[in-house]
Amino acid sequence: YTKATIASMPSPNQLIQNGLTTNISAGSANITAGRPLNIPGNYSLMLWIEDDRSVNITVEITFRQCRINEQYTQNRSLCALCDTNHVNFHPEDQNCTACPEHASCKTRFVLPMFGYWNAFPCSTNVAKCINADACTGFNHSEVRQILEQTECDFTEEFLEWYSESLCEEGYSEVLCGSCMDDFGRVGIFRCRECLNSGAGIIVIVGSRSEER
Image (cartoon, rainbow, N blue to C red; front, side, top):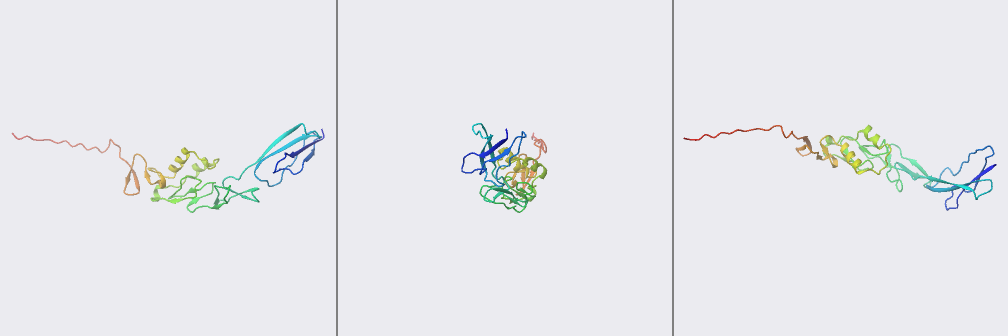
């Protein structure tokens, strides 16, 4: 064999406008196909040897959509990464926006700082806690390790863990404003561990005298 040809299958969006032919007389060859920028989607290519198209190989190529913390540019043919001061959780129709105040966006997610809370890592709604001491902020190493390969499709179990991880021991729920089991309210906004049920029992023994 002396040549191989690759071309786009008939479709409205063709990856290769014209067929590309390369010399394979040495047993192998390289073909660079496609433009530097392409619209995301699926493309089908057909490869055949010599001039016989009846014996061919179909090659499927997929150009992915933009992911979180990216935005479309160049007529939606290039995904540009947001910088560490910006985030984008809806790249299909939004651009990168500034990181909220009182949060870190050094990962791909929005992680609140001490005294602040958000419902989940893809929420830009970072709220101030009523009791700042109840909200520890994120544990950077632990949260980052878990979020490393995660998009925004979190499980209920993860969201529950994430919410609790932002709270000091004894606090839970939205804005870390509730007390956990075995903790009770002290004043208006503070929680304190309850005494053991077997402790602090006072026994009063009474006596009665009878008149004779």
